[in-house]
Structures are given as structure tokens and as C-alpha cells.
Image (cartoon, rainbow, N blue to C red; front, side, top):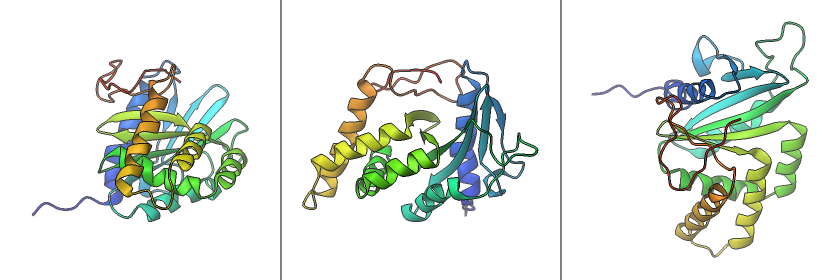
Length: 213
């Protein structure tokens, strides 16, 4: 009987490694650091540094109850985690916090669940984004990366809120969430999807256009 992988092993394999490879493929020449003992270590799961920008990334792979993983993401910016690249200061003046999320199932289901949580209190998430310096959400599926700004995801959650009600069925909610994300990705200079294992080669996905950070 095959041994079940630990959550930390899944996060490393399906979230951390593909995202690090994606960052290395960018023209920005990121300086990358990850803890020696993976996501089980204290500290950020990935730190990406370039001139005047430090990304502090918390990674989660969702293969079970969503709420426990989501709680970990929400609490990440509040934890006192010093940056690896700094010797004296707690965090740099140019730091930004990001989420990296992978899941076993379809991303559309994940979008719908997250929209449901965000739409309950849009004002809270707007303050959360601003006060805790949130920058991007990276969604990882089958070694492909989809990047969206945290503030834009809040805007899309607000659009989602206007189209659903308490009577809306789950199947219809997922259709609406999928349509909102596809419409966003179809716009000019939107999502970036790239295969982590194929350096410089864009993945073939009909709902995306590529842009580098």
C-alpha cells in the first residue's frame, strides 16, 4: 500500500517547486530562498528578492478541508517571521506578502469557495490587503502558475457577490466563478501561466495571456 504523503511534502512538490521554477524563468532575476526543511520550517515558504521588491510567500496545498488551510494563509502576514535576507530588521521597507495555493481538484471550485469567503466582508479584505501589504495570489495547478493581484481578486469577489444570492445553487456558483475568472484572464495583460518544467515556454491554455513580473 502506497504511503500517504504529508501535507508538507505535497506543498513542496505541487506548490513550492513549481513556483520557484516559474520565478526563475522570469526576466526579473529574482534571488530565491526557501527554508532548508521545507514548509515545515518556521519562516516564509519562499522569499523572492529583487531591487526594491521582496516577495514573502506563504504556500498551501489544499487536499482536504479548506478552512484549516485558508486560516493558515490568513494568519501568515500576522506571524512574526523575519526575512532571511535581513540581519537586523524584521522586514524590509519594500516587502510584500503573497499567497501560493495549489489544490487537488479543479481550480474553479477553489475560486468559488474563496469568492464566497471574500464576499462576506469586502471591506475587511480591502483593509487586510492594504494594512498587511498583500501583493499577489499564485494559483498552481498541474505545474502551471496563474498570478493575480490580491486587490484585483477582491474586486472580482465583489462582482461575484452581485451575481449570486442565498438561493443560488452550488453548481451555478461555480459556473459564475469560472466565468468571472475566464473573463478576467481574457482581458489585455492579465494572467501569466507558464509550465514550470519548460523554461521559457508558455502553456497552452485558451483563457490566458502571458505577462512577466
